Image (tube, rainbow, N blue to C red):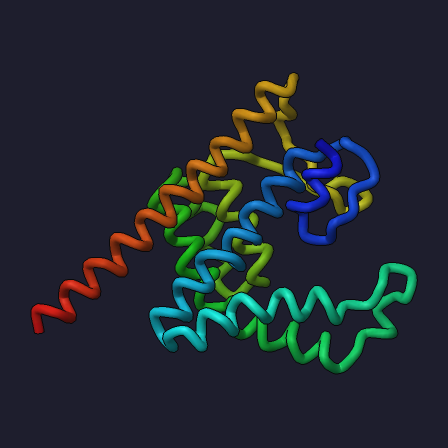
Length: 190
């Protein structure tokens, strides 16, 4: 489980299986945005070039990121430039995806979380809105790791939480594709 969780999480390094579930959920939300939602959005706006750019930027940033032992002082200009461009390209997508989470999940909890966070960091907004849409509450521990307020008691509850997030992502993708199809049909009627 730890091996597969490391592939899903953003940084790719987890020291133990403690608090594994919230990190996996966060990784699922952010990677779904990077792999699917951003690609669909930029394909709709810029065509294939936008889709390729949206998919290659996170990969280029990860490739150019310094090793863990080198520290942030050794970040290359390429890494900083790709991170800035990725943040710029993620900004509108994350706001639409967060709204999609609210429509596909618990809108009341989504709204309570998102109403004061419109200008927040994109990944933080995406994570908080995703957790709120499936009605999960968490806090950060002393090390900055995520801890669920109501921790699952066994592996079946952890699996159910992850499946709830997977279902939220599926519903959001279906909603987005339905909106895209309606816009396409509307364009054909004009």
